[in-house]
Structure formats: C-alpha cells, structure tokens
Length: 84
Length: 84
Image (tube, rainbow over all chains, first blue to last red; front, side):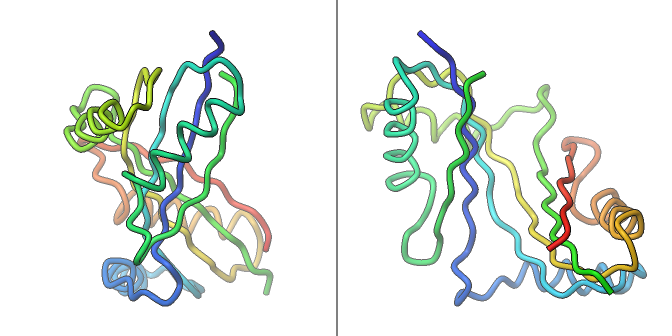
C-alpha cells in the first residue's frame, strides 16, 4: 500500500488570545529582533501513514484532526498531504 | 519595507520520546484510524514581519528560532519564508 506523509497545522482561531505568542514576541523585541507584526504559536502534527489511496489517507487524517488533534472551540486546522 | 511570512516548525529530535504523540496515536487507533506508522507532535510558529530584504528577514527569524523558539537540547527547527 502507498505511504503518505501528512502534516496537520493546528492554529488558535484569530479571535483567541495567544499569551505564549505575545510573550515570545516581547522576548524577541528584547533580543533585538525588529519588525515583527504578528506572532502566533500553534501545533504541528506530522503523521506517516499507509493507505490504499490518497482519498482514504485524507479521510483518515481529517477524522483524526476533527476528533483528536484540534479543539474546535478555539482552534482550526489545515492539512497538507503528500505521497512519501 | 517588504513584508514576509515566516513559518518555523519546531520538532522533537528523533531520539527524544514523544508521549503526547504516542497517546494521540493510541487514541487514533481506538477511533478506528488504521495504518499510522509514525506520529510526532511539534510546534509551529507563524510570524509576520517587515524587513529590508529576504536575507535580513531570514537572519532575524533564525536568531529567534535559535534563542527563543526551540530548545536545542531536545528540539530542532526548520524555517519556511516567503514574501507576503
């Protein structure tokens, strides 16, 4: 069966505050990094999986993303999938 | 000044255990998702910044990544940068 490499990026929704991101942005300023306009921290889930075809792989990872990887109240996610 | 969109992916080094990833993988199996061979959870930092050129933007984000975003003992990072 073909092997796929999936990357799920989980981000806080834009309306949700990101205190860790704000703290990192302040620390970057103290470090002398200038010009930062926005900084948000999210999660990335890298998955290697075997599936009969790309549609099947996508469905499996979408199911996981909806049910396990993201909290839909405060987060949304995007999926990048490729044959490996 | 031009605006850039940087994405820093911070991953645990391959030799470092990822208990959250293992727990997620087990939960995926219970959910009926089959064929997962590997699952690792990392961080993604999305940065919008202004810089005089791409080299400058890259240097600023590399400095942040080394000093603030990743713990070099257990993590490594990769940078994707594009003009926005």
